[in-house]
Image 1 (cartoon, one colour):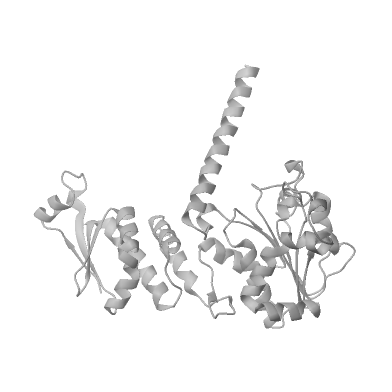
Image 2: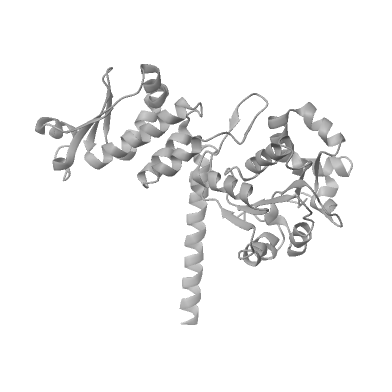
Length: 355
């Protein structure tokens, strides 16, 4: 239950002396079912509370019988809305951490609270330890919906957005529900500053490091013993992209990871392997191309060529969808701003030279 009322003049002055918005100041009483829920929303040492107060410029005080939020009327409504979303996450067992709080606060500030509330729906899959796998951002939710509804999906976006992990989760879900009979995971074995020939071991030893993120995701969801057993039975196949040539892949969930490092010929070859009853997910980050000539990235070309083809969706993640440490999002934004500024300076120098 909430109670919204104007703030007394003395309290206004104590809150923010001389502010232009004092006449719009109010206070709102926000309640949860019990003190444990309030504590979960507030976070350890009030860390979540501090993020909310800073973002919305409000003061939040736990009065025991209720939580009082004081500040400009619109701000306190948004702060309460953010707390509502976090409370719902707690009740559904989704869990709250710094990244999720920052995301919720950011989305509520952008008037997208209703979209965030859809993230507490049923889990896509469950890890071996029993942890439910759910979308943590609206972008991730749209990505999962696209995979469920279409035969081919291209997931494009920066590191840390869950492109590959969520695709593997959908593949595991499809396998468990007998929608497909096998999972095929592949990557182009492109050298990123290292020469494959100088790495120790045979061919499999040389390419395994490139495929390790795919193994890790499967181990987390199925367990190493189950994965090894399914690998032996060819229910799961993890191989370099070159191994796909000349095959037709029927009744399979096929994931091509790191697709920004494919050439036009390679990605066309991969796409035409699609067989009866199969799905494909292609993931990549077009800001991290390791090809000698980045302009030849097959993924970039495929995005242009396939954008109007029915039953193919190109889903683009943003830095808001990064679910790793908050600094990863800041780093991606900083590099994007730096590259944008360099591009502008380059065009300006070119105009001045031609002028």
